[in-house]
Image 1 (spheres, helix red, strand yellow):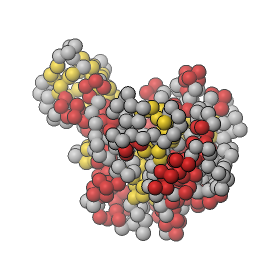
Image 2 (cartoon, helix red, strand yellow):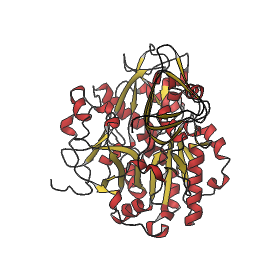
Image 3 (cartoon, rainbow, N blue to C red):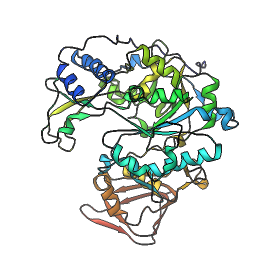
Length: 486
């Protein structure tokens, strides 16, 4: 197979004129958005998506428009970065997406405040990473959080424990993600939900980050302070640390947009994958954008071998130019998510949440590229199964503040699969693991089915499968040493 170029210039989508009129039926949405203080670019961006929706667009990307991607530049083969100064660390800003609540795990507060390891939260670990790197490299390295209206207050209270973070060259520690109305699936009007009016609104997806950076004033502040690159990732991905080799390569090749991608495994079949457009550019396709007839191709990890880690590197001057010429927002592909207006009431009226993915901007930036990175740079927590592994002795905090696998495990994280019927929430996890995680340092995998409750100082090794009798509780006694298949 001939090798593809290591970066592919994207073929931009057609951009709307900033003065384009809003579509028919949009006026009630605009009125609501103006009332809560949404910026004009935010309103225009949502109007663009609403116009597509009302015209019958689904946001789907068929297989013929999402072709396989060939070999990519491999992070494992990048040259050493040299010093922080040589890599340009002084001009880098770290931005973390921190808009999510831990509702899928039964929490009401910011997910970033969840205890992850040694009683430290995501935010604790992140803050320590940044401060350690600042001190070691003697650079300013700002940390900025994109908070939502649901996470801003609690996050700022937690950040008070790290006053040094606010000392970062006139760059704020946070900016706010916006809100957009949910759209009634029955008549495409704004939904009303008097039982809980806040549920008539939703975040517009993390693709809104580009206009939010601009409209908050952060983009201008960063440029004026001499920063030219942003590293953006999810706050719950503790593998997304600042890598000087990647930063150095980003600058050396004059990329304007870089997406870190990792090899897909069977467990990643439902995640968004990298693809190539018929014109040759790179694009991102999410599961919600896949047609029913193309589902098998979407989930074919040999045909589409790379998934988006949501670790992105952005050249800030290029972002500023794109926003200036395109009306203050990037016209990213619409993602139409259909859900009940109240997630905890499945029978409540159906709505469309119109969203976009920040990784989709790979199709809009000139000199956009993708980089193959090891799985260690993707360490998210989406379920309690993920969290239990991080709680365990298989991981340790390194001297740079990063949470890493212990050396004796190599690159093999323990695979944990807990029965969602009994372990879906943090309360469930605390009930069944009252003394914390069992020892997983020698465990290849743990699969639990049914109501299994663990005692103190339990040790697991090999591939362990545990099952409780139907409608009964199984107790693992204190000090148990369970060995599974090697």
